[in-house]
Length: 436
Image 1 (cartoon, one colour):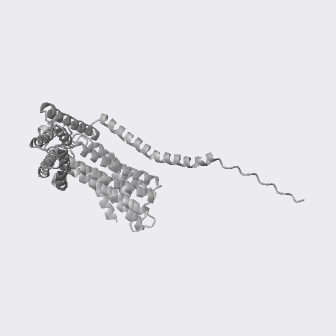
Image 2: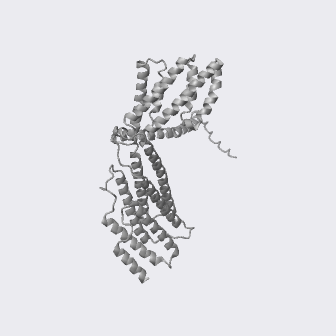
Image 3: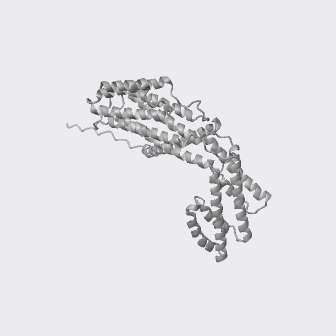
């Protein structure tokens, strides 16, 4: 008798609820991923705000200067409203606090410049709007006549970034209703009042003088240069560096160029903040009297250039497809010690630049131990260079370039160091050259 095969167990139907849950789970996962970025950005922004708030209470700095300027702008607007509305009873009191708020700029010179530009733009907008209203007798027609002209004038370089106020003033003037000679006079008078109050508050109440920014940026350049050199020294001493590590050194040295751009911007702000703030205005605010000269900017520009050349040489030596070869690990350990000394000198220069006095109490002069150690390391590397000469051209080229950059860095980073060799070192050099 033929056996009938057992029928397979019927497959249970899928639970419709389970099937419908899969897309919802995907949507929840996608929502969590999309929500993580805004939450992360908010936490980062909150952390930056917290650091800024703590910096305000910690001591003088950029954050405290920003707080002072913000409070001054608010005080100028309140004062302008009080004078225009309560003392003068002017119906156009809105213009005075609006203009006063904008007049509190980063420097007294920029406040005066913005005052002249904005007052001219507002006068042009008011007069052109009034003339267009008298010509057309219609608000829409007046706007069509004056706005194209005012927008063209707003792009004139003489107005700077204040030219747009001409067009906005024309809109406010025509939207206010009937244009009359009295309303035009009130508007222009309130503009002049607000500009005068804003400039006076900015110039007489803690006038902004940006001398600290130059020293802070110079010190930052010195410290970051020292950080790069010490990082290179640590990796060379460990001996586990490669092309990827050298590329990271090059990237960090390139970031020094961005720091230099910030320094140049701070130098420009420093010069502008000293304009129109000589004599009595300087006495209204205690600021550091010493500003490093422009030669310091040039010196650290050369230092960062040498660091770029040094890291570029190491990157080329680490590239297996290039002919130059890096020196032996023992030689690189000696060179790392030399770079570490230079990095420490850069850190010391950064601390010196943050000082408030220009005397020679801490002039960055290296101690005798550091100078003697540098000379000893330099002579050891020169001896290795002589041994490699004529025998390993590839290693000699790299070591010679690295030694040249280290010497240039030391001479620039420590300007008060003895540039030439000591007499006994000179005699030893002459003896070595005669023996060769």
